[in-house]
Image (cartoon, rainbow, N blue to C red):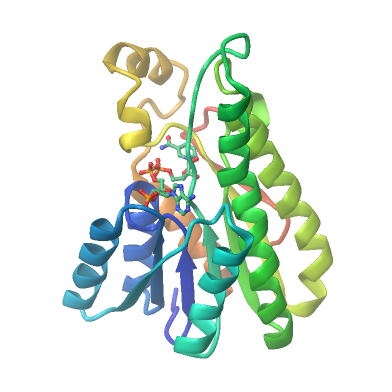
Length: 248
Ligand code: NAP
């Protein structure tokens, strides 16, 4: 898997799964732009870490909910590095509550970051990738976008929406040499799942055929594959990285 000469943007790249995706793409030779919204220090530290391993990286603040800021993020890659080969839409948030208690604000917030943010970045990236006649877009969905989850009507709707965007854009741009796929992680060990507490994690683990939580690395390896030429004949797919939790 060789990503030498490729330029990649990873949204929400400073922490958790995104951080591991940045490190993995950089280790395969890609120049990685670490996007962040509020966590500047995480992104700056990660850029230093990649450079200390002889990789190439930069970072760029952008709130992906904003159409204009997403456009600036994509333009940053083009203006600074002359191209954009890989876009990983990884940034995402949760604001869980049963529907009966969920505020309209928390529904809108999660849809705006997860779904609209992914659409914003795809929209601006595709413009350049179509001219280039090449590109790889990998959207991070979730298994709950496929099977649903109590307490996550906002989040699971956003992730189901991401799957819809993935399949539709794939149909629009595949003739231009652009592959668009989604990765649907199950339960992965990050700050997002830390808050669940040990008891709930143990309960969830009982239903996973490979009986452990996933590591960010498990997701990053699949993203690197989909970002590479090894996946040239794969588009519009949703690949679960979930230890067998959901079998389609
Ligand atoms: P995380 O550590 O909380 O990372 C989320 C990242 O998103 C942060 O770096 C954050 O950056 C960024 N972000 C949030 N709002 C943003 C915005 N408006 N603009 C730009 N960046 C923004 O969570 P994670 O577990 O690594 O999750 C990464 C992705 O995997 C998410 O899409 C999540 O839904 C998905 N996922 C996770 C799991 C899991 O079990 N962990 C399972 C399925 C899917 P700032 O701090 O700078 O805002």
